[in-house]
Amino acid sequence: MKITRVEAFILHVPVTGSHIADSTHAITHWGVVGARIDTEEGVSGHGFTGTHAHLPSDQLIARCIETCHALLLQGEDAGDVRRLWLKLARNPALQWIGRAGITTLSLAALDVALWDLKAKAAGVPLWKLLGGQVRDKVRAYNTDIGWLSIDDEALVAGARRAVEQGFTGIKIKVGSTVERDLRRLAAVREAVGPEVTLAVDGNGKWDLASCLRFCRGAEPFDVFWFEEPLWHDDVKGHAQLARATRIPVALGEQLYTADAFGEFFAQQAIHWVQPDSTRMGGLSEVLQVCEAAHAFRLPVAPHAGEMSQVHVHLSYAHPACEVLEYIPWIKDCFTDPAEVVDGHFRLPAEPGAGTTPTPQAWARYRQATA
Image 1: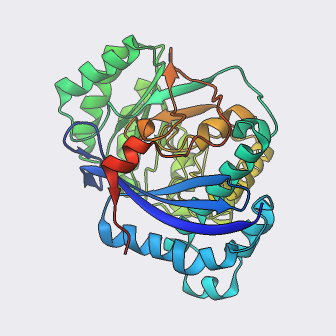
Image 2: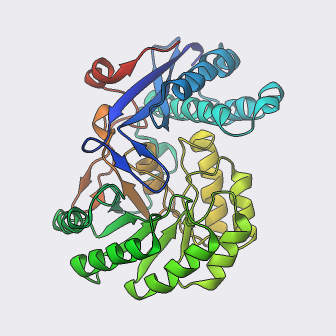
């Protein structure tokens, strides 16, 4: 399948309600910066990364796709996914300007597009190409009810509603004040009862002292994990926290490389592994992390299932993956959307990775690229 054309695209999709906020960001739209790869045979693949819908950052990623990585793909065989990943990820000129950030986000979109293309050409859903189905169900946990911008009463009502809809896991955001967050945690636990898994997510806001104080107060509420409690690159701090509390530590959505995960593994600073194919170098690098986690007997919860349908495929195909996040902002923008039924993600059925934008999304949300 000879590659003939690589095109970048940008979609800006509204979030739930008018806006959402966690401990570090407040946004109204989610930015989908993607790549379309065309071949001589007429088969096309789509992949994307995600941003906070800021046009300057969107444009930088799109330009990297079209002016840097696309040139390395022209004329190549699209079926050689792993070789092409190495060609893009280990290109000496691009390594000079960054082994993470914009170049990695560009690589992520292109790598997923190549996997999508390969599965479409084979006529199978991506999970079959990854080795087949290893589990009957993938459990979903709902994060969209738990933003810090939601007041206490609405937070409790949303948690109850999620459980009524069949979710057996929910996650709420923390990182405002320890006192407020403990009050909200207690209210949600009382509302959903002891059978529902309840996780918290700090988005890297707090220092170690604040985390320790929060954990002392949170332990009685049977917290499933504390996600991104500290600054994302603080391996030592996470290791100290992991030894000091009974609450499992989860992280990974802000790590860009398998090497970064390796440091957390080596320091026993992580209990739940959360790689993201839209932040790392695509699915190819996430698979490396999943294999390493499995070797350490650590469970994987890929970041944001509905925001990257490829993670649904991955979770059905890889034995390390156990649960998957539900935030439904962009799911209906794609031809094979991630759907949750009775608290579990539906097994994808269409060929590909589920990353092809619908004509409606293309018409409604597409932004111009420079």
